[in-house]
Image (cartoon, rainbow, N blue to C red):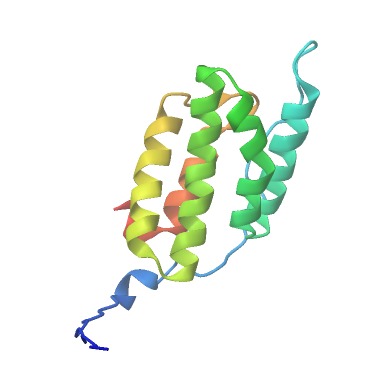
Length: 141
């Protein structure tokens, strides 16, 4: 049996980790969950739970809460949910030290949410995107 060895150089840039540790979102983040009559209560409950977990810094769990809804939605809402999910998972990746993944998800997620600014389904996207930028300054630049 012949073994081949490879030399792998790993480099990690920890400069980008400043500000990426687990932090709770701001308690004054303005998110309104007063659904209009006839709107889907399940969606509003999932969004309420998503932001509750987000404020607690449980970013990957945010993904679990919205994933089923995201997969079942029509195109317009699917893009909205996907943007929220990508932004939450960007924070998860940054927290775990995967800055490359965090940058990609942050870029893609914020681009999707820009389509819905300033507010969509009772969610203050201005506040959410500001929170994201404040907590990921090196990635948001």
